[in-house]
Image (cartoon, rainbow, N blue to C red; front, top):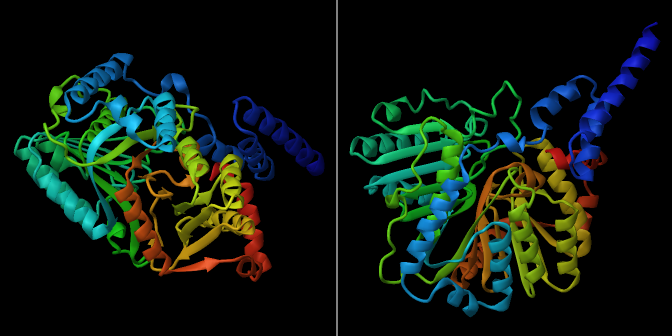
Amino acid sequence: MLWWALFIIIIVNGLLALITVFREPRDIAATWAWILVLIFIPVIGFLIYSFAGRKLPQRQLFAYQDQDISEIEKLIRKRMADGPGPSVPEKVALLPRSAQSLVTLFQRINKTPLATNNQVRLLTSGQDFFDRLKRSLREAQSSINLEFYTFYSDEIGHEILDILVERAKAGVEVHVLYDSLGSTGTTLRFFAPLRAVGGHAVPFLKRRFNIVNFQLNFRDHRKIAVIDGKVGYVGGFNIGDQYLGRKKKFGHWRDTHLKMVGSGVYYLQAHFLLDWNASALTKPMHVSEEHYFPELPDYKLGNADLQIVTSGPDSDDEQIKMGYIRLIQLAKKRCWIQTPYLIPDDSTIDALRIAANSGVDVRIMIPCMPDHMFVYRATQYFASQLVKDGIKVYCYNNGFLHAKTMVVDDQLSSVGSANFDFRSFKLNFEANAFLYDKEIAQQLAAQYEKDIECSTEQTVDSFAAQSRWLRFKQVFSRLLAPIL
């Protein structure tokens, strides 16, 4: 009877696994990965799927109306038309043809126009990032809007909170949006001092995606700060002590962020407003308020042209992934990538291999240590496969590499929150800046070469010398790649 009961459980579990996975459309890789989990981990597998496997119900995603989007677009068009220098179409026409194709791609799949005449500063250390961010916050006169995946209630978290409280007391409008899973340990109680003086703080989409309906798999991974609608930050740094190198586990933290002044800030502001209104249903921000989109000065702030591109499970277009692939396709001389997680899908693998076998100098830099074990082993697996096609893979040894950057040839680059993995492509809400500027590309390339001095190149022989047990863990983790 025991054997018959076990047999029936296995059959029923298998049937339920097939029904569960196939009832929602998904790509083949993710389908097989979930079938493996559900069949080989009975019962527990279904619990895992409940939390991390169900797709995002589109009808429940965002509460904002089309009117919000149209109001924002109308304001931005007005500001851009009144701005200095050539019009946006004229500026696009001045770009190299390769850059024009990327601009067109994002205009079509992300409705993101080119933002011209920006002053952009590259920030590559936690100390520099936080010093500049705190200075910008202290100088705020009108509004502060922060959106971070991680906002820890540690030393630097309290420093930032104290500044926010002080500015709120001075009459500045303060809004903080954070991911409740990424900010584990931080609750609304932490933000009580801010709320007591008129500031606002809410977890991203918590009203709709909480423990009751198991929607924990869709994370706000964006790292955005907008001050007075004039100064913007976007990149890889979160708010926490580890990003200053204060955590022994990681040591030195190597990341990349951008500080920008110019029309690009409008689009960071727009995405924050939409994300806020999706999360704070009872305290929406009035997107028609013109002070969120102040007039540009009548002189050029800088020469950098860029596009702010977002992606997430609210769209099937995978906009940032498509941008990455297009950048790889456009490479003629070099394509240098930094990412903490290297778990690409077949389309990005093919793009990398085609570029490398076409004579492009393709380099990928990854960390030398894990922060998520299965993810790191999968990263090692894909690295071991890519080196076989002549792609240079480097392990960064001077602490933890968390930068998400790409530099192509002499003018094209990307800096943002999106990793080179399935999760960033499909499951996370991400934000990247794609830049069309020679100076920024040169700075990113120079930083890359500096980081190589602290790195070890991985080769076919070095991977072959690994133990069988380590290689087994890498292969097994690779099977779970689509759902990590």
